[in-house]
Image (tube, rainbow, N blue to C red):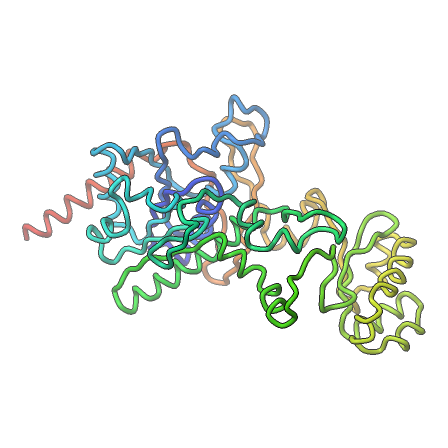
Length: 396
């Protein structure tokens, strides 16, 4: 039984941010009911596929972040489906949506309406620019995706090579980091409700999350007055803390404290550098020269040789691609790759496992993603049975 096995979540989200948030809850045992618009989540048909896009029910994008959920297709514009949704709300703990501000109100299903049906409800939204209930701004109502959030929040300005253009971070951090923060907010609201019986609105904005993610640039600009910008793989206040080309790939080296610096110089057979740059201030002041000294050494060495020389003495690692991640025993020992069935294919699909580890209630993917409307009968039957029980208890 998962840690959140007693939590019922109604998930009206689509694409990445909302589904990733509710995926985290599902991995921890929550009963997540994916309420899908007519035709389903727009990302269901997005590639890649295991073998045949025409045969498989959905692609890897949808499978990865919707595993372990149940699906119910509802059109909230119709009275019948809206009432079915409201009946589910009465017995839910959490509702999560990631529409533009005002969308749920168009269906007469906004927070205030749902709270009337369930005063203890926790209502959570993920939006590009937040909800007016928690702080109104001129940007609310504007559409936003990961790329927009990374651009506005400062991520792109500090990512990339010094002489290159602003660069998006590879993973969708605008979506995923926001989603993780939203899950934290939901669980905090659940804890508050357990103490007080009071539900509330939880609001996480992608723009806000990117400002938080770039916390270093905030205090840097506050202290220095200059906005930080791109500097490749290096760090503004730590050195050496960078990526270096090896004879057969790239390695990263983080040897910014005095002990690690001495060990790095020993591995390079450069006691002169250890003596001449004995403290961090001296190394930062002459970082360009020292970067070249380290690069001259690494480019003559195989990756494995560098790591063997530094192992246990200096934090260092190879820059791995996905195939190398798949082969890493650590990844398997930590259950960070999970195989789930892929409807319409003769093979399974591998998705990322849960990064949250617990000794008594270990989170993990709890089965494949649902087919569209796969759980209609059981969900509506559950709702009807609960209504019948409530009516019988009222008669008593």
